[in-house]
Image 1 (cartoon, helix red, strand yellow):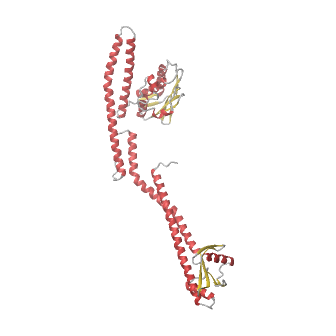
Image 2 (cartoon, helix red, strand yellow):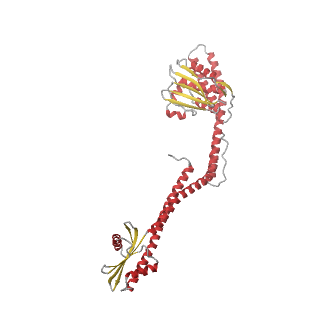
Image 3 (tube, helix red, strand yellow):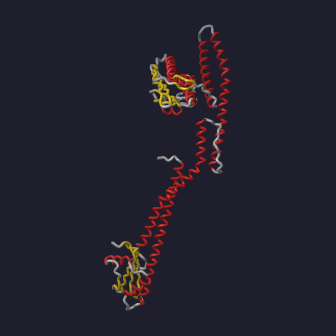
Length: 463
């Protein structure tokens, strides 16, 4: 799953980083505490053993048990203190007998392997113990061997309590950190959210001369807002210049085209007999009509881009409108023997600019006739759903390839240059259809399968 919310991503990174830091710190703390507890335990164990080693030579001939008892009394340890003493020949002089014999033997063997340094031993049914073995020499010969051991229960309990504390703190720390990060990020990203809302409002209202508010944060967000406004200003100026040029050029071209058309009509009338001359002039008239339609389309789009397109809304009967368009389709498709059907239910009245709505549907019907082969079929219909009405123009023509569908409403976009040239298209018809639909607060979409046909669906509000 892709996480797209920046707050979620930042919090995720923050929590993961915090978890890694907590893991490293917790592990380090555990090892440091373990080393400290074991160090203190080993110091205590070495103190007991050292005391025993010092007392043994001073109490020759005295019962060894008294020496051990004096040491235990001195350090205040009696319970769970294991002491085993042998003479130089290996004869046992004393054993505290706090451990079973076989366990005691295991402990002594392990301690012997680490003579002079503490070793840890896991004993059956007795847990982990720490043992230290020391030798006492007199006149260069081995006189005594003392082994002192104590259970590591206290050390293990301390480490276990530390581990429990760390484990309990993990979810608490993560929860508090996540809530804190969410609150802080909400505050930090609030200016960015306001910028997004403002930019979306500008896009929705199509008010290109409006700017987003610049937060006085003095950071990257403020610089981003200024950069956005500067870019929007440049785009606004460029679009304004482009619209002005389109409008001016279209206006300037209409007059000479009208004059040229009149001159050609005069020339056609002056031709003494129909022939090559008249045919050439008729072709010129066709091209002039095409240029005139192109200029009218550019003017219409220019006014819409500049927010100057005014709709004369009135009550329009969709049943009447669709049947009129069906008659136009039959006339346009008569040469191809196209079948034109109307699918509709009850009559629906909408508030719309009837002239513009006719222009929209006529563009779609004209395309359907152009790109539907002989004896094909064109279907016009409308349906009401919730608070909207949907008008459909469907054909059984050549269809549109999937790669062209995302660009079909772009201005001057041609699906097939040679095909469009053959039928006289100029690439503005569908752009005008989209503009008219959006001016009515609606949408237009296309569904098509190459080789099977195309369906255009216009969705308009009922109110």
